[in-house]
Image (cartoon, rainbow, N blue to C red; front, side, top):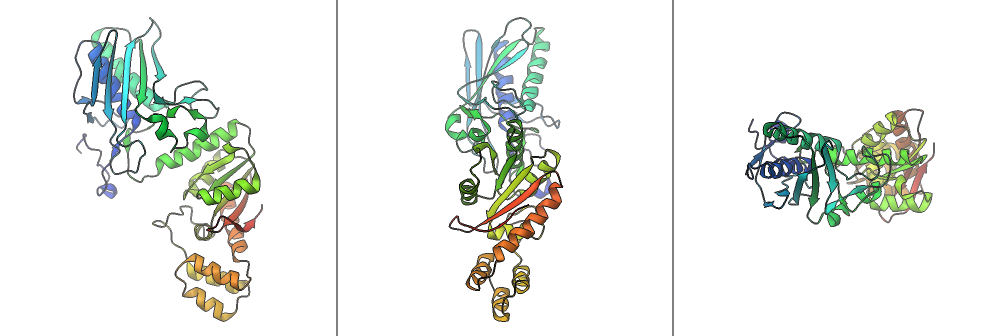
Length: 367
């Protein structure tokens, strides 16, 4: 495999992979420290990822000052729709006090942790554990080569990071002032959804750490607003689960909260009702025949069932049910609740809200 291009899974060859902010920060740190120790700025600079890959990164900026060095890398997220694609990630490194080891600091555009439940202590810069380990390893290697102690101060910054962070989960997770420096492999796999599921998990962690007993997973903005209006819970209780209901429920099974409410659109929840745990249109499909069968069980006239079988979407079937005054949305809520309850187990009580396109709750089931 070409270590300069993370294209190593056959199923993803049509899409170009990229690098995490953690990998970019590590490369910038290594380049800056090399310059501080008299080697000059390596360009490209090569790092070793947790999986053993050794990509090279071109430098976008380099500054050697009085007692410090700074290097910058433009993040390339490949073909992933990442809000940080194209962002300038910089590392400034200076000597630390003897015995201090490597210390990390949040520069402009990098957030600070303000709530418990994350893998970092409150007050720490939002530089996650694996990126820290990667930077520490790069620093240790250079320090050993030069025969100096690995006592250095590392400040990571991201250009326009505070504005970019508003498009992420960070404000809700209690990370203020900017982005998180993320990554567990150093590689961004396009549409792998791992970053989203990671955010779902961290949202649950924060809710648990705050002692919340009820969380809400919503498929989108409209369903979240409907749940907020109905339930009135703390902001931290609301999880933007998107299509990844399975990712949320499986994490809740291992890290339970007493109650979870799932709030979503009729079409997506009609798929959950059949046991689908990924609600994306590319990975699960609406089953019109199943919806028609449900209408039949609810007592729909034969002509309504026939029309439903010919419907082109879940919402067409819903409209037929509403015209016939049949509680199809309640039936879907109930079946969704049963499917979800089977995943989380008895320790978590599941409720479901079905929301229409106008944001109105049209069906529900309570555990």
